[in-house]
Length: 192
Image 1: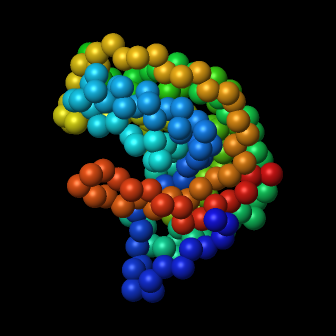
Image 2: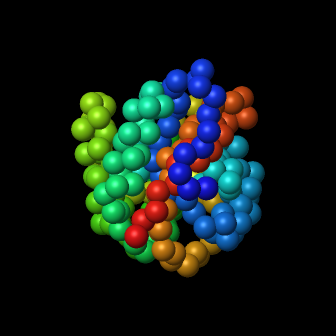
């Protein structure tokens, strides 16, 4: 889906983020791993395969018109496509407790950082508050259900996935639900 999605005029804000989608075949290969990992570590909330993506900039709740203008400027800036490859399992911790489990990148780290920097610059130009943490490209797999974190038991080996060409930047809407977040593309921007 390229371009704008029609939205009801009475809804003026959206919870949004920019990300890179995974190819469908990669999601399918990761689905079994996520199911096995969920059984091994139920104290973590595992991402559903359809929701897998690499977040480049979480925006939060924002006026639709403002996020649309940021996406317009990014679309006009001729962003470059690049190769992406996923690697080993990693974690973000607080002390010894794991808060997030993720797959790191083997290919495309610098290109992903550069693209995230371009998005950050457009967000700053639009007057959004700067992201406080340095960008570390990764594919989030799970978050601890306890806000302090949890112990991550041994997991099955993650599948080895082939590198792919990241040729789309997606502006996603994130809707919160009791069963977890639901992500829907608002705009798809071509990477040349």
